[in-house]
Image (tube, rainbow, N blue to C red):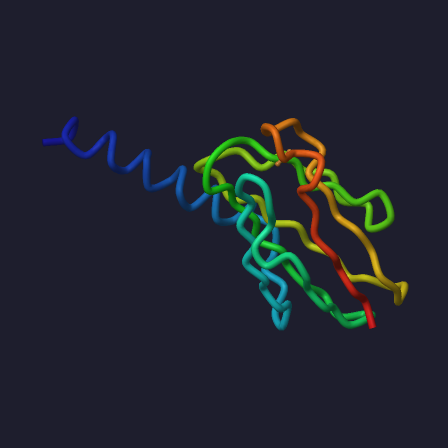
Length: 118
Ligand code: CUA
């Protein structure tokens, strides 16, 4: 009987520990879902407000893509089956371009999205 509960209990502890050390949620942060797929981002245009914290939740629908903007200091690899959360609070108004910087096929060079900060 004792052995039977040993594994589930240790698993439960791991879950509690993981939750305890997870980064704190950002109450009020707007979440924007973005899908990367050959050869576009959907949506390919988003508008953010200066000073507003947002979470970009990015996933791939097919192969590995990049998610890169030098100006916004974003540089992530988007692998299939994983979700990448990018937390940003844009401070500078303007129009920015985010590109795929990981070769993903024939249309790779055209894979980009526009981010407007107003
Ligand atoms: Cu997507 Cu390169």
